[in-house]
Amino acid sequence: MSDSLLFSSYKLGPIELKNRVVMSPMTRSRSIGNVPSELVATYYAQRAEAGLIITEGTSPSPDGLGYPRIPGLFDDEQAKGWKGVTDAVHAAGSRIFVQLMHTGRVGHPDNLPAGGRIIGPSAVAAPGEMYTDSKGPQAHPVPAEMTKADIDNAIAEYEKSARLAIEAGFDGVELHGANGYLIEQFLNVASNKRTDEWGGSVENRVRFATEVAKRVAQAIGPQRLGIRISPYGVFNGTAPDAETDAVYLQLAKNLAALKLVYIHTVDHSSMGAPKPSPELYRDIRRAFPGTILLSGGYDAARAEADLEEGKGDLVAFGRPFLGNPKLVTKMKSGAALRDADQATFYTPGAAGYTDYPLD
Image 1 (tube, rainbow, N blue to C red):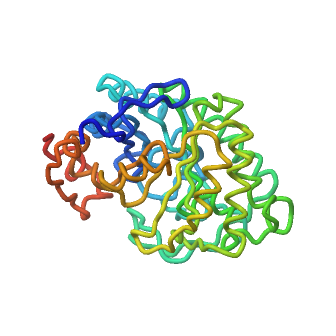
Image 2: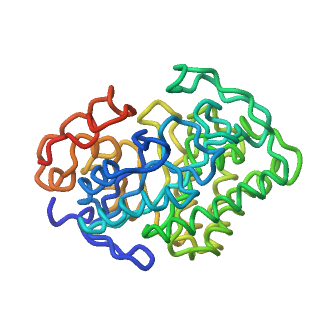
C-alpha cells in the first residue's frame, strides 16, 4: 500500500502533513500533577510517523480535570511541559494539535485541584462512576448548573488555553465536542435541560460549541482550529434524539461560516454505540468545505477505501498506535499489529506507555 492515498501528503490549512494518518486523541493519565513530563514527550515522539498527532484530552480549566492525572493547559507550568512535547514531536518529523477537553459534569471533586468545581449545563449527574486515586471508584456528583457568568468564563478559558497552546508550539487546537464532555453536554438533551438561550432549540443547543469555536478562531486563526464530534455517541450518558441530525448539521454550517480547518467525526458503532446516519455524514460533508477527519475502528484497508470514496480527507487511528509506535511502517508493509495491554491504558509510569518495541 506504499503508493496509496492514505500515505500521501496533505495540506491542512497552513501546514503540510507527510501522510493522511492521524493519531487519535487517547486519554493516558500519565501527567502527574496535571503537567506533561519528559515521559509524555517520549510517548508522542515515538509515534511521530503519523502525519498529525492529536494529543489526549487536555483541560483548559481547573474545573475540567475530571479524570486523575490528565494534563491541563491553563498555566505557565503546564505550557512549559507541553513545549517539551511539541519540540520532541517536531524534531521527530510530525505535526501536533492539542485537544482541549473540559470534562464538565464527568468527574469527581477528588480529581480536581483546590477550588475546582464539577459543573455542567444542568444539574443532572452523569451515570456511573469516576475513578479517583484517593478513594477508587466514586459516583459522579450532581454538577452545579452553570450560570451565564460560568458559561462566559468557560468560553474565556478555552480562548486562553488556545493562546497558550500556540505559545507552547502546537500547530493547532482541536476542541473536544464529543464523548459526553462539556461541549457535547450542551449539544445533548440528556445533559442539557436548560430553557434559556443555551438550551432547548437546535439553535440554542449549538450555541456553546459555536461560541467557543468563534472565540478560539479569533484568538489563533480558524486555519489552526478543528473540532471533534460524535453524533449518535452514547459515552458518559449522552444519547441521540429526534433532532440529532439537525443539531449536527446546524453546527457544521456554523463551523463552515467560521472557516474552521477540520471537523473530526467519530463513529463509535465499533464499540457498541448506534451507527450514525449515513445521510448526516453526507450532509456534513456537503455543508462543511474544510477537511473531514474520519475515525472509529479503522484499519488500513477501510481507511483507504473511505478516502478513495471521498468520505473524508484524513483518517485517525487510536488503539493500534498504542502497541505499535511505528504503525505507519507496519500498515505500509502489511505486518501484523501488536495488541496493546488494556491493563496499563490509564496507569502511571512507562509500563504499557513508552516500553512497546519500536519495530
